[in-house]
Length: 138
Image (cartoon, helix red, strand yellow):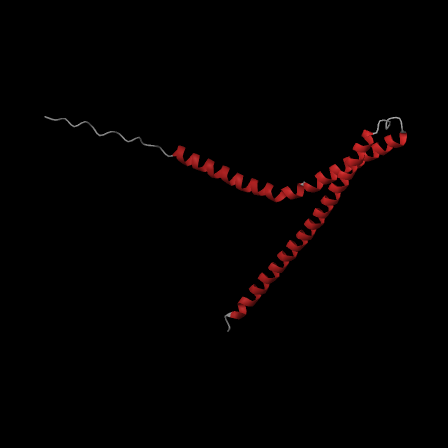
């Protein structure tokens, strides 16, 4: 029974670490769900604006009507904003931080090991086996 007492703090620390990791995963999942909802909304809005733009282009006299030209300009601006919003939220530099450092760490480690092996093989003299001398028969 005295053996289990020292394990309790380590066990409670593991439980606390697990709970913290679980809370982080839940937070990430919530953010991902929110992002997914936002992307779906933005894609739907983008489709609506694209459809509206095409309808305005199909009208023969849209160039002569200033309100249609103004609406077309507004639609173009909104489409550009949605496109930038969709692209920027799908890609951000913070998401590359961890893979970047893994590439640096393991790529650098591979590079160092490769140079070490090359140095070791080039430094040690390589002896070429000599063929045995010919045996003379009498």
